[in-house]
Length: 376
Image (cartoon, rainbow, N blue to C red; front, side, top):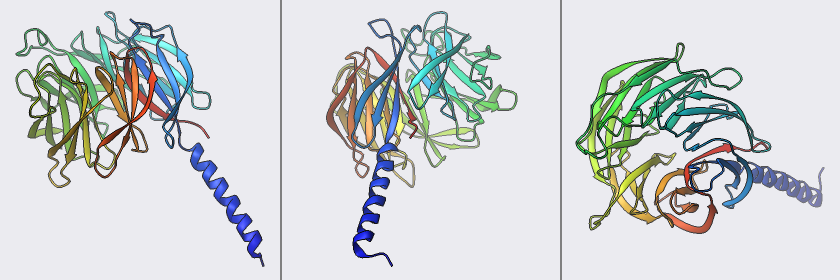
């Protein structure tokens, strides 16, 4: 029979092993896409400890111009980055989750100019790219080794919007894949529409959705889009009129139920919205206000999906182009494009509010943030 002293030693050992495993399991790699016009070398990788909120530089991947927006394959072994240039490219990399190193696989045409968004489908076989300059979306096959094939389909939008300076033609700003991996929602800032498509994941072909488009308000400029974790509601943040529109989502269709400002009631001045994210528990929605330089925080009514304004939190920098909630839900990281920093906030899971931690990473013109679990 084990005596008390040995029992204590055994428990202490188990606690140590458990704690060590827990600490290791809190390590992630933070991948940062940037504009390279002001000193950035390309894509940056940092180790992020989700327990402490500490960052450690790991690697830099150069040789690519404006790898602004990134996406990660479902198996987390491959990373895809647009090359946001006039001729437009998409770049494939393998990722080593032991070393944090990215290795270039190949480059393909984006099928249009100024690609600014990319999404990989849930089979890991197709990459969907939104071309802002070209007003189009393209689909590229992903080979077994993670490399990209040439675009097999490019769909060009038509029309224009009410804002003559920003909506003179279509501007695809995001391509969003629903949880069913079939419904595809494309936010087109230039024509004030959420375009809808159906993806055949076996063939990689896109066909028109039902309905093929959902109109937003004139001059709104839909930009980024998220579906609620319950799969019943969806939200789009609109760059040009600083609003979020909430929808009922079902059978491939969006039905508007609310539009709400991203700004405080007394705000006067210039603003343009950018990114949008929902907490994993579905209780809070966040959006970025550029030029006002705050994140808006809403609560989500768990019965109706409607939003209630809580607050705006200063991002401690300029032009929050992109942000993310870390996988643990404890932190929000904000990429401030024009102050060259990524700022860390502690997130209160009960109230949704944010507290600055004083921690930041200096990176030239950060645009996109993604995380990959680090190997033990």
